[in-house]
Image (cartoon, rainbow, N blue to C red; front, side):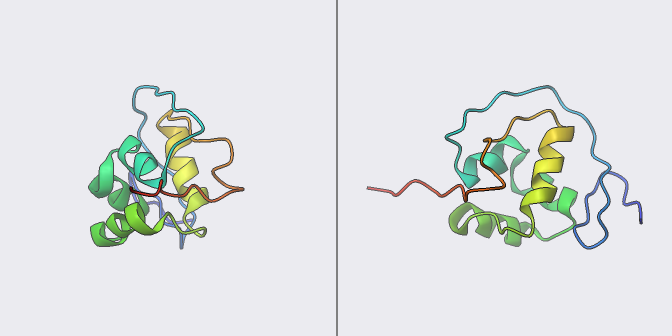
Length: 97
């Protein structure tokens, strides 16, 4: 496996994320809330070795299934609790009125 410092590269399967203070989050999180909890668009994009625009689009469209295991690992290493169904059911954005 290739090491990328503090990045997780889905193509290479590398996990090396710095720890941050613990956070507790309920099971009713939207994908946008997940992204914000993980340090917002820029920090998550760097950790996943992808572009900021890609992660920014996830706020509207949802986190793609191929990235969810990596996002979950980033959250685990940062001690952020994700919804229990994060990998089994898609966390959808709440409809706007």
